[in-house]
Length: 190
Image 1 (cartoon, helix red, strand yellow):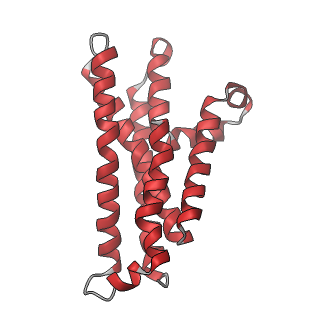
Image 2 (spheres, rainbow, N blue to C red):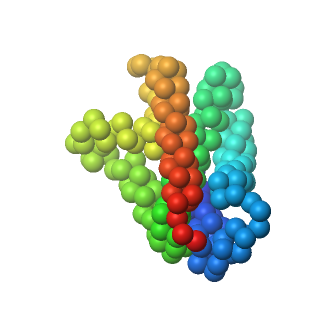
């Protein structure tokens, strides 16, 4: 998932932001297609393509290592949380792309954002001394990490409801980011 979180901003940068720079959007919008429809189709294709890798990786990972030890509910939670993580990464990259209209800025912005999330996720000292808001934000930006953390601590207080709320809010955040990107794209000059 770490590799994917660094590759998805680059994918969005070279498929969406590049069209702003080389004038392809101006040409495409001369055809009878609406801006919202074009961005919806482009975003849908990007999200669908980016969903394939984590889904198959999670299936393979769970089948090899954990299937004899866990139930189907863990399999479902991990698959959905992998998709939620990809959806959050892709929607933030699309928003950065629409706002900046520059492929280099999209790539650097997306890589910096997800590099920061990865740094916060792996730095134990920072996590122990941080306020609760950092844990809450991390929970929505990294649902797969939160689901893994919850599963590995299942002996103490494993709660599927907590994970499901986190997943629902992550999907809600992603949809909200796509709506904001669509509104900005409707009003931006190409």
